[in-house]
Image (cartoon, rainbow, N blue to C red):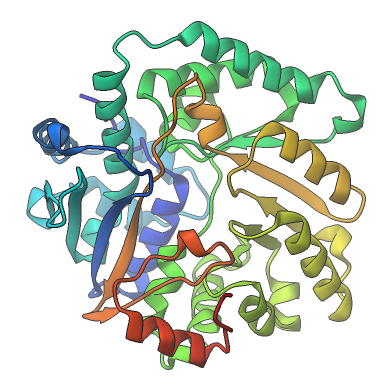
Length: 393
């Protein structure tokens, strides 16, 4: 089995799931899988992927895992009680060759949001590991360790980076579970005070690390269908989040509609209410400068706010961003693929995105066009009009 614990996922899946339980328990959703790499044939692995998903659906939360979750101050007792009864069901997920051929596969998840939200991360981890153990039967772990050592030295050997904090965000695109475990253990031992923690709840539990995460794109996308009015869906999402967590988990995601639309909604109230924002598409330096200017314009001291960078980072970019912003705001970094799938092979650029909620299409329109994913062009055009998002050239 690739996935041996239901904690082997990102923290923000649990934080969003609690919001779903308390505010949107009847929401129905659909997720779709996509591999962005060209020329990758995943069809030979369909049976193995199905078998791993079947094993995933047999898992239950263990008592010690529930006790760990119960110890997080922002997770409420009724939610953990629900998890004690929870399991994933195969009836909500299907895996088949894509209709268009070309080696693509169609992974579809349809059903109640409350019962499908935990599929995404472990399913992506399964696809990765099945693919790489079939195509790289004798992985070059020595190369991986050497690369990881050099990354760590880049941070620890430079006095100018003394306050730089890096977290592992690499669950969904990891080379394998075992390599992920090596990476986390190495970071804990060698990165030392520069290691902020991990988004992976299982490894946080096992290693006594801080689990990190707040919200993901699917939450704000679903609010397009769940809120009172489409134009107010981003505001509705932030307000609902704040009602649920009362000051905890205060990092807002900024790129569901692009930075322009985010800043229009991220007014003085949200500038003061949230601890900061997370970057996940577009130029990170431009994003940081715009966000700092926005705080100043709203008479909020950016020195007390957090800028979280998490988009395709490597350690060189982390260092450059830290030096640019370290004296002007608090900065944090989540590194994913470059940590957990950098041993000499081309990583799979795979995603599983929400595409419908309560029967209507939902979408994100990020500042990186390749990250958009919606199969309804008319809805995307309407979304652009409602949020005044100019077509890209």
